[in-house]
Image 1 (cartoon, protein in one colour):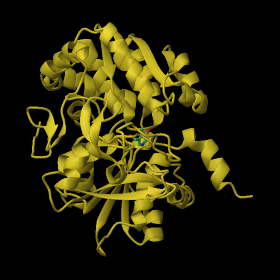
Image 2: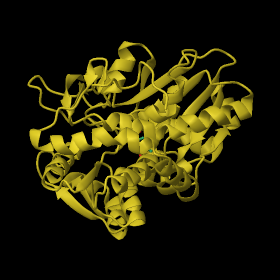
Image 3: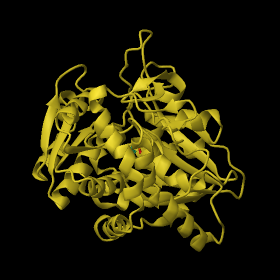
Image 4: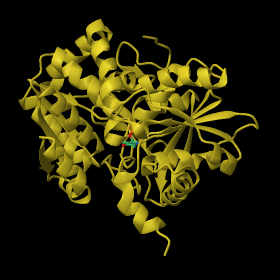
Length: 396
Ligand SMILES: *Cc1c(COP(=O)(O)O)cnc(C)c1O
């Protein structure tokens, strides 16, 4: 597998960010994973099973679609990488399929995960049903009330959903509970849902999601005769769909990589999830990264209309990619994302996830030249966001 200066170094760092800041009691679990993950990922038997499941279970390769109506609307040439067509409706399954096979190779009998909006919880419960492993999902009590249909789906898939009742009763609290569980149950594997957490998780999840970018490279050449697009655009919560589609292009400086954060009600409104612009360096979930925090270093609640983007941190690779100027950061407000979702629905008959709509909204903002070819990662489908769309977009 390729490495480059944007990959993690041997100590688990991306420049000044990353690392593994974990309680001593968790160290053996993390160390076991760190020692074995690359060897397992490179194992031919693992690779064969992983690619068979991606093809026959997830439905990959996801199509690369030349969106001619959107292109006419925005006056740019636009392709969509259709992760919305995957089983369970988003890119998250690429990671959970890989991690369940990894857990099997490590001889683990039980799976733990945290979930915010429930999308990662559903993708985890799905692969646990497939591989017949016990599944415990931690979810903030507040989030459980907000995302009832995902909670019901996880339960029907056989998972146990445990409410986190401390703090604000959201994702951060669910993560703390999951870590506590892992310390007490080292026979478990903890499936993290994005390119966050202590080393080696950011690298592990990036590699599992890089199937998106590898497919894109091949599909793009088949469709256009060119080696690579001029721009790739993806939304960033923790950063896994972006990391996956960017990965094979880091060494091609002519390809401009755009990460789009959710700025909520506006970047300076105090109600935002633009972690890179509004956060400060700090430690969250076991790694050094940019974190939304108050003057005392307490984590503050981010805000976005999109449940998948309101994470108070960001994968530790991103501050490094920002400082080295390899990735260009932009943002989209709730309002801009809703408008972009409406355009995508009406122009293309495609119902995007609210998260993905933030990437679409950036089409109005990023600088492009006349004949540039642009790929947007459509990370997921929008059926989970129906209530929000109904509230804000219904024609009276
Ligand atoms: C979870 C989610 C995201 C945000 O997570 P990343 O790790 O930043 O990719 C984006 N889009 C969809 C559809 C999601 O479900």
